[in-house]
Amino acid sequence: RKPVVAIVGRPNVGKSTLFNRIIGERRSIVEDTPNVTRDRLYEETEWLGRPFLLVDTGGIEFNKETKLKDKMHYQTEIAIEEADVILFLVDVREGLTNDDREIANYLRQTEKPVILTANKAENNEQAEMDKYEFYELGFEDVQLVSAEHGLRTGDLLDKIISHF
Ligand code: GDP
Ligand code: MG
Image (cartoon, helix red, strand yellow):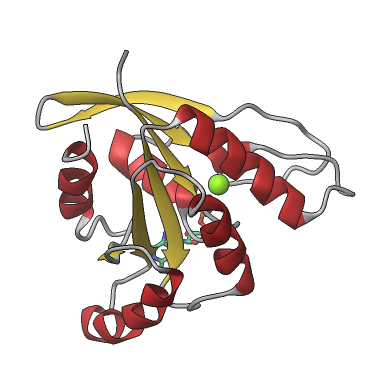
């Protein structure tokens, strides 16, 4: 069985962009279709010859009445169950939000490795300063990336495969 790496995070942090960046294609569609239930998106990929299955959990949509909090918990729950490594994505431009804290609380219950990754870090100097607020979440490190521009995604992939 190939290791499973799940990308988890609140909406709009760039999960699908990162998923596409890592698999090297536009497969995960960024769209907001209400009242549509979709499966998680899986894609097989590899880094330095180490194959793994990447999962974009953000595609799951519930009906509109489903609270964001419940959606996130559901997605995070699935990710914890299935994943060998959890990639917890936050947005360094927007900064730490309560939804991030909620997800972090949820992820703290797992024994599985969590890689806290702060996306949208195009402005390196600014991001290096802004990343420190995410240490409050209690994970070991904060990996900066820009999914859109492909910055430091190699470092992130090195970290991911170090857990296999
Ligand atoms: P998701 O909801 O977590 O899957 O987020 P998306 O991948 O759909 O991205 C949400 C928005 O953030 C889109 O407008 C993306 O273009 C933008 N975005 C994603 N990655 C980056 C990044 O590295 N830098 C910047 N500046 N914007 C990004
Ligand atoms: Mg998405």
